[in-house]
Image (cartoon, rainbow, N blue to C red):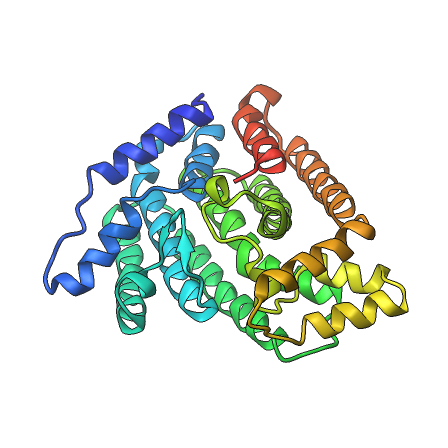
Length: 324
């Protein structure tokens, strides 16, 4: 059994062995810039961990792992452009370093590269692996559209928000785990349980991301904090605060999340003051812990000895406690 650290090192080795050079340079340089940077590389680690957990050979899943990470980074290029996010992993985002058109086209090329990697390595379950990847890819697009739709709606519910982040974030974690299980010939029941485990840790992961966007330290978080507040994003924190607030607090929050003042720092500080008075941080941390506990229970139901689940249990706990 591989540990989380060993799988992380494997993924780093896989990407170090790949080159993303080519012409025209304007197309390929942003790809190298993005993929060479690393990041958490959680999704390929999950894919390899799933393969290993079911006794498969992780080398058979090598290109699946590269594909899932390449696809994930493609979505980040486009998300950063749509959200006008200036920083990713502590560096300028691609559209800021180059321009909008470069972020679109290099992102498109990364999507194509992901499919190329998946097709590079024959496997007895390749058709099912491709089906999982295709379904996951489409659901992520659906989630992004919901996210954009919410920007112009004032009646978004928490249930709608949770469904949006399931599509936009969780399905890629679940999909990575399911693909890893397929590389190892896991049975259908266990494969679906593992997929559901991924959905649950994905929801916890995104809620933690929402929390860090408000309370994180930019030097460790790697992104500008307060972005969701500045951009009037509907997040779990914002929606929960609206539900919990009294009349005057709700009116103030509604006013703040309808504005784009020149002094955005003041706006962020006012929203955080309201969050603090309503103990929103505590509530969100409790919800994250609940989702994590549900995920661990789902993992427990998979028909393998507990020692084979140790790495995925470790990953779930890392997501619960992360500050970056």
